[in-house]
Image (cartoon, rainbow, N blue to C red; front, side, top):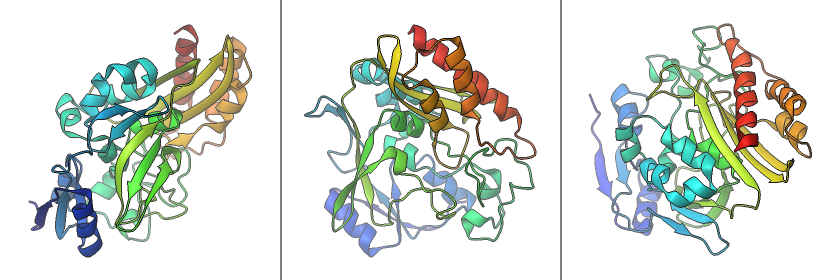
Amino acid sequence: MLPKFSFVRATSLREALTVLDEKDARIHAGGSDLIGCLRDGVFTADTLLSLGGISGLSGITASADGGLKIGAMTTISEIAENQEIGASFTALADAAKVVASPQLRNQGTIAGNLCQKPRCWYYRGDFDCLRKGGEICYAYAGENQYHCIFGGDMCYIVHPSDTAPALAALGAVCRVSSPTASRSVAVDALHMPPSEDPQRETVLDDDEIITEVILPKSPVGLRSSYRKVRSRAAWDFAVAGVALGLVFDGDTVRSARVFLSGAAPVPWRAAGVESVITGAKLDAATIAAAAEATVEGAEPLAENGYKIELFKGLMTEQLGELLTS
């Protein structure tokens, strides 16, 4: 049963920011995660602030430098179906197509997908876990087959977003507004590691709103992709995922951005893989070395050691497919 709350449907960004500044409010975008959290008692809210009435927060437009601007309220379905994203920013299109179910993609927004709450069954259940203000992470010694192998450090969730690692691999940036200022936050710096604050998912302050996501111009030679492995063929979160943004000069990888999903509490940058493949040709030896580098430093828990081989195999396949694309 949902708790009682007031509902404000803002008609301008200024009004929305004023509400955030004056009230204990939570942002309602698509609402597919928010309503579930309220119903399950993950958190409460005195006020829900709907952004659905604000013009200018949705849609996909070209930017002056040849990139794209994606409004925060743009649905995942719109992104998945956009021809320019599919052609020039393939990793994002790949990711959007595998988010949840068709119904949820029609409802969910890009900003909401970036800012969604973790799916850990202890966090979502009746446990006073560390992320909800308790003293321990129950997953560490409990049922942890889907939890992280990197970056746990107090809280062992995995970040649930598919679009976040893809956008990070593409070098995307969020534009963020507050009542007093606006700023840019790179997607690869948007999420909060548990070591810094185990009760926050992002670096955003309570009075800040993501207004758009900016994709820089696609460089010549860019090849990108996203793939996730999941327990079910549809409507499921990543057990393991790989987002690649590689810029080729002929057969040689000139630069690389590689991020993992289903691996860590934040989209996890696979710096070891980037180091192996940058400046190299993607032959069998390089791909094998990259696969090993994918799991360097991993610390699996009692029930998720299978992710080691899963990530290695996934990286091998994705690099091989990108080479021939």
